[in-house]
Length: 274
Image 1: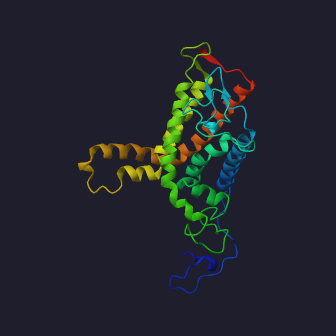
Image 2: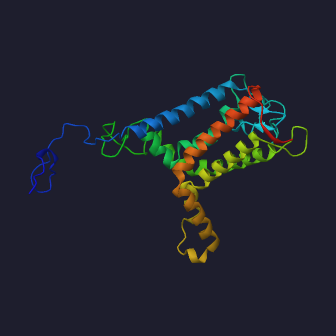
Image 3: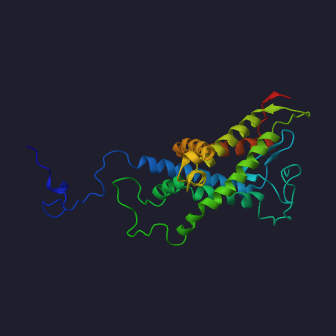
């Protein structure tokens, strides 16, 4: 008969819980995942800040490519040709404000309040907690009931904004089917923008709020077959929400960086035809 060490015995009627001096008894690399998340999200934030401050190289005129971080470009500060969605209804911006600083509020707010991303950056940035069976980095816990975390509750409204963002990026992908000599054409950038739009939609429609909006408050799915089918579709996306969150995060960076490189003349867009 084996005996459980005293320091691992619990207070299940056999006496008080033994004090454990170690912060955690886990011996695996539990710190690796939060570290990778920290590096990944940190890199995205740094890239986004640099691009927002840059305020240049976001429109490739010959190819009709618009960088996602500057779409839609609605101000009179936008370069000629880039305001192909709704024109320029917003007046000229001060020199220290770029169109991206205004645009990124909507997709940034959606991702910041996303249920998956909350888990990701709570663990990797705030150590709350960094992993299962690892102590929280804070002495007290108030949940999302106090400022500023109480604003996490407006995630559903950012979802509505994300639908608009996805629609605009889809429009940009369609516009990218523009031939350099007129007519229809396709380049590598066309494919990149199209893939980015698909991944953005997969991430957006797999959102927990979307699933609740479509299938919530229904007592009988049998009486709502259309909503049931839609709920089943977004539920499949929701099961891969974490994967689509990261895939779309990388795809939007790749798409933005590619358009920037083409616009700046650093690379030449590879054309499949025209």
